[in-house]
Length: 610
Image 1 (cartoon, rainbow, N blue to C red):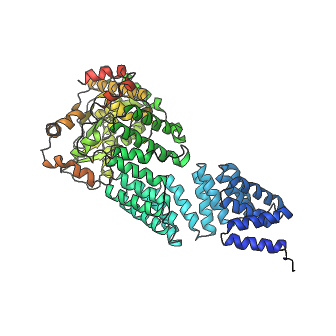
Image 2 (spheres, rainbow, N blue to C red):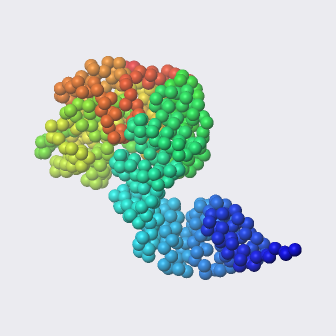
């Protein structure tokens, strides 16, 4: 009987490599291990088993094996590069960068090491260094699609969207089946609010890579954010056919059920899934919890709703980027204004008549969640009105003012006529850059609720300006801010709990009343409750204030809302619905939770006649 011939180490290694190349990873793994039992210092087996371990996400094992590889061959650039990739996966970015630098030192033309170095630097927020690494990789290897794509990712993070788009297009030109570059191109176009083009590129990514979860998620997200419910439903069904039992798809299914007022079905759907409240999954879990909160609110389970709203806000506090916002700084700015603006001070200001002969602007202001988006949508339905929604036109004006006035508010009384003329011109120039189809016969309304805090500067520069003030019951207003998913900044960071929200409301309204006491402000007050209950009369009064004739088109504002590409406020999915009254007096369902803030708001409830 013939004995089975045992393979030599070389033959075993070659067999392992062949299986590795054919993706028979378990067989390759066992063969590499067999070699290392006999010869622990076998370079090829340590290196390739380390690489294989990284492939199957066993990063600790990969790290150990690749470190052994470097001990065996200290001048092997590939080993340093692969170890750097493993350390990057483990979140050890500084160590990873040291490895990539060593790989490049050994092989100065190592394009892959430059690219990987760029990825690690990008993760650390060292964007300019990352860009230099990607550019060096491309210089060495011009057809390096990954480097072009990664350069685009960093440029996109820096807000240089057109440059990012060029990088993604170059990556696709090199590799036409590059699904990740198509998805990234969609992301950049989404940031530029070119939503249909973005959706088309997400679809291309999915066609190339049908199980590409991120592209499916982005496509569903863009349809949801742009209120395209039919397209959202089709995207969900397509994703379900291509990817089975996926939590992200379930999330959007639950969101769509909520939007279609199938609250109990949405709760049942969303309770079956969950996401880690860390890293990239935090936003998904926040969306799930927030949608559940809204469902419980609509089904009358108010205690559960409040618990979920609180949980959603707590998720914001877990995000690293929240740490850069200072809620107190915004309050301090308001209080500084309250102290500064006094009748005696304003009487010292010199009067002037503008030379430009341009009509002073109209502003739509108020506290967030007071009905400004609904009023915006109604007014923009009029053929003679265009509303500029949530644009930083006033913020740009304040920046120009700060450049002229190094001492801030103190310099308002010292502004010369030529300086005021420059500020007016800066405002109109910036506004015109935002208007897509300029029409001198239209009335432009600058809408951003919290521009209310800058009324003092506005009336100094535009003494003839008009203000539409949107009001809502203070308790409903504050509660709704607490319940809303705002994009965080110093102001919005105050809405993560009810107490901070109420204090901000109190400060903002104190400042508004101070402005009214010292300036002759041409304003018109619109109560959200009147808009809902007595629509036509309320809108007629606004149009009369604006000296604009009535048009029946304002009655069909829902058509306007549904035809818009994107409504850039948290209320985007509410103004496409018919007028409803369930949000009026909502705070009464949360009396237990709002008990502590009522004393803060009681003055304003009486002041605004609620």
